[in-house]
View 1 (cartoon, one colour):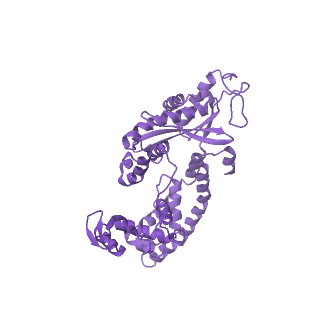
View 2: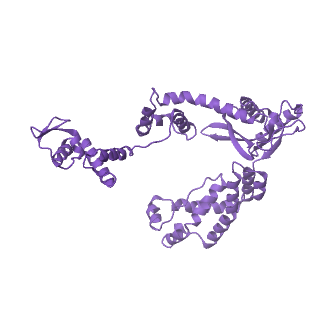
View 3: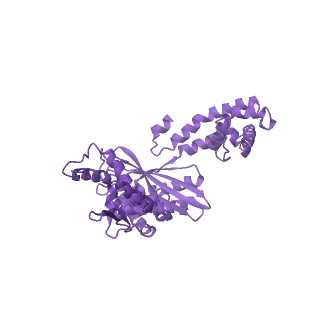
Length: 416
């Protein structure tokens, strides 16, 4: 009884015992004998993909030798174990049509990717096997995702409207201007299950002068979209701009002019487990306007550093930073394992703080350069003053970051 011939290279050949010849199933080449080494050599020279498959299976077979010992009656047990390990190379993941579509929509709307990404060859290599596995003429491309985004938006609006029904909410409103476009951002805070939840109601482009009355009209349009009555608004947080203050006062006047006695059939009673509700014994007729804590702190710091001596010192420090950032010094910074200082945006004090802090970290490097080139000279008294400014602004910088928390409460504010 001879050995079991289990070399997988024979899968690609047909052996004729009477003629003692092996015929390649791919190219019909005839070879004398049935020796595995000769068969593998033919595959290696003429059929690289099949040769790789043979080598891969041989490697797997070595890894499972203890588990796949050939029996005297045949190699069926060994082959079954081998097939099991070959199949395990392919991933098994829990995905369906809905998950794939939502993920693609999230790529565009949340992650900010372009629709072109859905057509990238690399992304298609990942996505196509999933699409083929789902079958039933399912496809994912830029066109059908464009159509699904408005539908998804309608569903989200409906979910938020349901969550806000008969609830007390607080708004956070701000305007950002970039690339000649002004966007009004409206966020709403709602207590659900004892936790503050933040929802983005809209990012609306402003196409008129940013007056208080114009902002009020735009905000009311967004609230109407979610079926939110202005009587549900407990507070509005804005920056300290005169137009924002005017907007809050105008909206507050509307509430004061209305009869806001809440009836039981219109507003539910208070639920201790899931949020804050109106009840028939509770009413208020004054809207609370809250100035943004972070913005107020920014203004206070700007006022405190607005003087000629400080500006002159900052100008000197900025000049040194520019000199240290010349291209010829890049390699020298790497040699001493030091980061180059960064330039600031003069209109933002925290940006100036970051510049001064980065310059302070380059003190030793700058001083060593000054020994050979006076252009890099910075007096010891200036280094002392630089450290004093950085140490003074550091806790204010940390406080600013904490005040930008999504779930800032009044107690958090006082603690900060």
